[in-house]
Image 1 (cartoon, protein in one colour):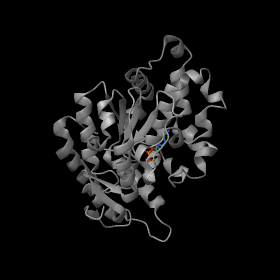
Image 2 (tube, helix red, strand yellow; image 1 turned 30 degrees about the vertical axis):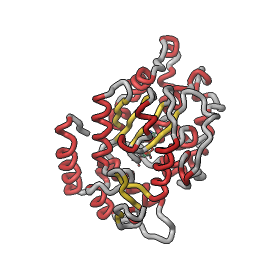
Image 3 (cartoon, rainbow, N blue to C red; image 1 turned 90 degrees about the vertical axis):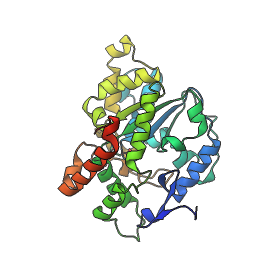
Image 4 (tube, rainbow, N blue to C red; image 1 turned 45 degrees about the vertical axis):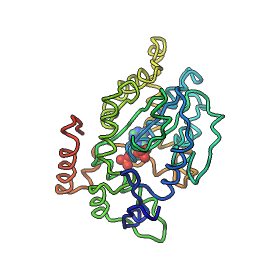
Length: 308
Ligand code: A3P
């Protein structure tokens, strides 16, 4: 690791660049371990996201979606639904941040098909078996302004107690230069955008804003893509609305299991639920900052037909 380029700043001081993207040293160990050890199965479903783009929400939705046969009736009234007693990150584990973290070799035999895993890895860094197998990837990203603001809040909440907060301005400058967890943000998004255009049966590309606007449409789209479409009977039972209700910010953020305690990886569970809205960036970014992000997006993404 010591030979890799390193960036200064309290979060950034722990960031190392590997295959073009920035990671903490702990993450990087997990990346290397899962690149070597993870064997994807054809029926696996990978949730791939940029940090702070709604991973927790997507995990909840996909878990409820593929396991709905086990909880066939009114999901919200079923006290035994796993989402009511477990944080979504515990139900759909990260490969590099949990299963393969700290050089751990996980025993995945207890996972039943379809196995759900998540990752923030960019396309180039995905384990080879993911690329070679018929497993499917659902990719979720979010506009860079809200992503940045959410990330800034999150990393400040994670900071060691003896270290002060990162200023908005410094963190912003680093984000724009591509130095952020799993950044450059734009390269991550563009990588999956291109892959999804080339291989639309393997990768479904989603945006947080569009999911917030039409969640029912997108849940049906995801179900269709994964090969778990809602039957006419399920539609009659309004299962789509039930899943969306169960996985909503309002429901999940009020559950005791998401309000207190930590994930195994150390983060406070409540830090994954802040506001859950589109456009909160307006409360934090100046006009200059807005311009700078718009310009980068225009330069890097627009020519490929990708806009936020
Ligand atoms: P904000 O910080 O803007 O509120 P991730 O899960 O990838 O870490 O992303 C966290 C962001 O998703 C946070 O955004 C969080 O509030 C939001 N979020 C968490 N659960 C959500 C849900 N059920 N619906 C919509 N947004 C949610």
